[in-house]
Length: 391
Image (cartoon, rainbow, N blue to C red; front, side, top):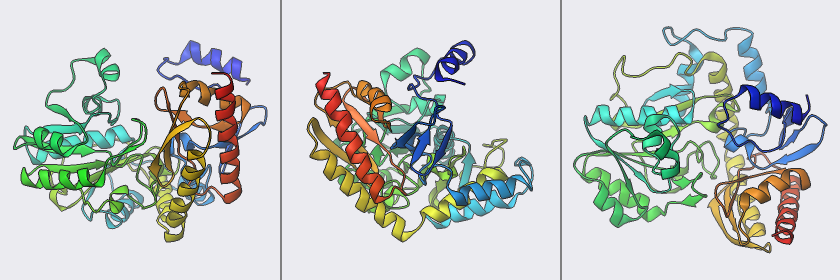
């Protein structure tokens, strides 16, 4: 089916909640995707940091295929090995507590909110300005962006916003706070790292008020920033982290990983999901985690990320570059980042996305090779030049 036909079918049958880019993706391999006419595109977005090991990674594909032949679903009324082993693996790789599974990042945030309030009944939730935590009601209430909240007001009570400064956190977090939730790097907000000194102060402030410190690692986790979890490079250990996106290797899964403080807060019947950590997605996640948790791969993420940031910062028309590892944002002087990203699909055949009027975000595969990095720099440079010429 051609793109124009698919667009008409989409308009007629799918609720229009997505501003889709003008591309039909029909297959993918590694750092590349193809459209219905077999045109090839360099994917520097990875489905918004989902296919972080590249499209159809062989070990993930094999894990899915093997499990699908044996058992696809049983529900959480029964024991299945893969999901429980995944919980063990996630705990051992991070905070050492227990895991609550869901099917998405938003569900992981919902679990985090419930877990924190179960531990401190009636307590408030503090999140940062410019944050994005999801679109379900609890996650949306934690996302203090007027444009996203206003159509669905009123929000759930008990949520408060703070700036990413020590003084603001001191004012916002108090004895009545159940949790402070922070993205170590604000992805949807434009790839803005929260300074380490602010994260360290957040830890001290939460300890002082017996509040949980929770890091939203839905986008930063699973190796994206050059350590398996972003908190591991900050010198700050949170009480829990949320994960999703890259965890399933392309399949939908989310989770809340706790440390000791919150590991037994939720009780039987407090939370649940029919599909969470089912056999197929859990096996995919075990495979993705095994590939990602590799010293060489993570070291290369840092090296390649530095190469890309240095190269992009030297390109005409770029005013600022931010990020860590292979989570990169850059601002363009001429504005209209969405227009540049849209044009680059057809003109340079490269996939990126805009997180605001001036900001372009890159989330390349962690497995991108040196030749592909060089090609990425060439195509981004060409897209910037074309955009400047037409601005």
